[in-house]
Length: 635
Image (cartoon, rainbow, N blue to C red; front, top):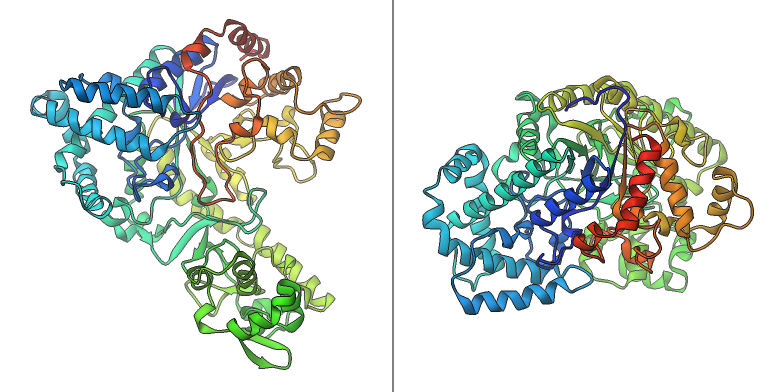
């Protein structure tokens, strides 16, 4: 189903597998719960279910691994998604009783206890492996699985053995066959869920992260495809004023293109085992990635790669006759220190700075990068202040050619820009706007067209893009040419001339939604900015009077109906937003529904449904409400 039939309009639901809850799950959603959720989706007239990445992220053995976009393998599935109910019963009665008690305890928790869940499931899978593997390894299904996955499975298993020795040195080592068996179990269960979806006429939509774990087996096995001296992230946006640093290595696209992007093609073809459609996370990364140097913590010192950096002659051509030293070294003057540190300015001078001349200072070598400052474990005021000094530059040097330059993103908010004369500010802004919004458009179009056509053609899956953020003009050119669906949100309109996206203008070839795993839910967004919502309520929705807070169910239903009625081919709403229209079904506290906070790189991904899927399936009034809205919309 690479392309939808013209005029097709369907509705669906988005929820991570880990967030699912059934009466029999083990403290976290699993592939058995996924089958149940597919049944509910079909029961309510929906035709698509979207989930987050399901790959193994076990790197540190702690809750930090709950971040689903940091896979250690682009092929291996996460062990926590194993449905223990589908496995043979343990023959050890005492162990069975212990796990039954633990299941009840963990499943009653309002949120996921990631570490406890994964410890328990690992122990259970090991017991089943020891009990069943001698029989399983002789089966045709297992032998076929080994043949189909040989190109990655051995490397993954060997990686896991080395990782285990590092994380759990006191534990007895396990056989690499354990990891092969575990992946066989996971693959079997996920494919059964996919078959169940197809039987019910439901499309399963997966998610392909733009990055991989810096210390995972993909990087270890094929290092030529990665740049380890860079960190992938995103420039400043609505989620984070300092940009985002995901920590992933960036891709060596020159090397990837040499063999026709086989690494990506294999990845997409493996996804087709489980999905009918997929979301390309941060599709902008196929045009250019925001590459941050390894010595940086935040995202402000990044630059787009690849991109057409500027020579000094070009910079001069904008009327900016600035010294290279002034352009690229942190601007630190007495007045800057007073503003940032207040009465601690003298302490900062004494501990961290070297006097250059007049009222100008420079950073000591031991604290001249963000990573060095981070390692010093200072208090928050000093740490953030020193970060601000390090970032206080007008231009950053190109990562490949030190004689070329990029204007530092969002520098207009900093004192290096403030110190310029007005005519220099005007010239800088002209250069800045040309660089970020015009200079690279054709170049980035050509870069994307080297990669994306190969990937779109690799499978029959429907391709959807996450094209939010600082979107170059060339992105819609490529998406339209390749018939990739865009993502449309009223809170983040593509048209800069409007405050809110106009639903009736959504292109048919698009996915329409209200919120995502990275954003506030609809109910949370409604209470974030009362003045903005008042304008939205009166001018956009057309209601008179004061906007009600918190959002009542009738108003949530109105919002959902408007989205369902729009021209977009797919309208995929989070489960939290579906539940918002029924005040008896939804959580009382809207803030408890949030999945992720992108500005926090160490967020704990632990949101779970507050009700069981079985109860959701029996909620006749609510399900009738959803079915009615979908029918009314013509989807």
